[in-house]
Length: 181
Figure (tube, rainbow, N blue to C red):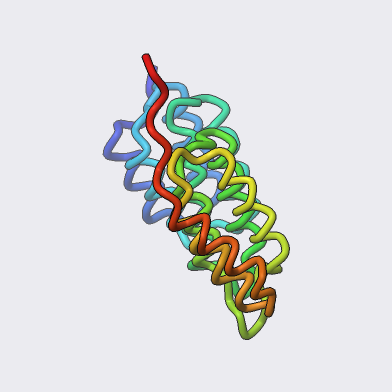
């Protein structure tokens, strides 16, 4: 029998500053099989939770509801990029973009969003980590044009004009035709 209504869960997620209250509401949401990512977004934006606590909730949510794991990982990456970047140098954001890409490897957004969180003045997250991640995406994404453009820009930043030019040429190549049925 549910302890909380959906509205009460939303309220705990958005306003509570007590981890135990939030955890109880989360456990109840899982027990009720609430698979609506909108409800959990309130949890992810709760500023009283530490990055470790958010990771705990995100991992459990993805484990319980694989159908929304991509959205959960993308939201966590966005939260970490915006709220915790000054503490961990975007490491958690990139980690969760990678998790999202592992769920839907052909989606371009995790790769593109990870590239957008690069801070050139501080070289965070490390550019070589981003380049490697984006290179993976060029192989997996159906239309990698924008990923090649981001790679070209990253290579330009590090002064590798040869690789930058190569990526720009790859971005200009026409899309390959869809496979025959």
